[in-house]
Image (cartoon, rainbow, N blue to C red):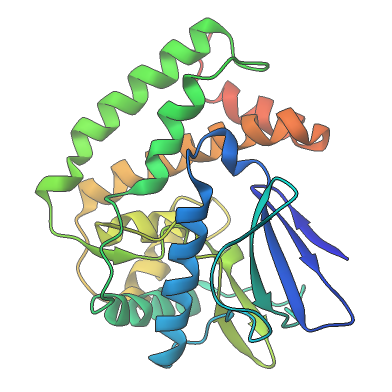
Length: 259
C-alpha cells in the first residue's frame, strides 16, 4: 500500500509492520541517496535511544540502506499516523527546542546545510518547466541568500533538516518526529524556518514556544531559502507527478519580476 509519493515513495508492506522508503525524485539532485538514507537511519536510532519520540527503523531487517532492482531504500516500523492530527505552533516550537537539545550531542558530523545543495543541482539540470530566465533569476537569488547566510561563519549544531509541521505528526495520542533524511549541520534558524515560513502558522507563537534566542536576520534569510527550496522541489516533482505541476507553476511565479 502506497502511503506517500514525492521525494520518496513510501510503501506499507502489509500485513507486515514494515514500511519501505524508496528513493524516487531525490536521485535527480543527490549523487548518492544511500548516504542520506543511512544518515536518517542513524539519527533516528540515536534519537529513539535518547527518548525523543520518533519513527524507528524496522526491527525485521538491519538498519542499513538496501538496494534492489535499481532502487535504493530503507525500512521502517509501521506506525499509524493520525491524518487529522496536526501540531499547533506551541507544540512545534517546544518539541523542536527539545529535539535540538538532544541533537547537540549526536556523535555524527553531517554536512553543513546539505539540503541546500539540491537547489544548484536542480538548476543545473535540463529543465521542463523553468525558462532560461527563471534559472538565471533563481541562481542569482540563491547566491545572494547564501552570501547573506554565511552558514560556516555562524554558530550551529546538528539539525532535523526538514522540521516542518508535516514531519511532526500525531500518533497514539502523542506526537512523533520523522523524515530525518535531510539531517545536517547549521543554524537552528534553518529548522525553525520550515514552519515560520509557512503562511498557515503564527510565526511569533512558534518562536515564543521555542524559547531560545534566534538571530532575526538569519531566520529571515532561512525563510527565503526555504521558499526557494520548496519551489525547486515542486518543479522536480512535476517532472514525475503531473498533479504537482500547478503548484510548481504557482511557486515559480512568485520569483518572477512583476509586470
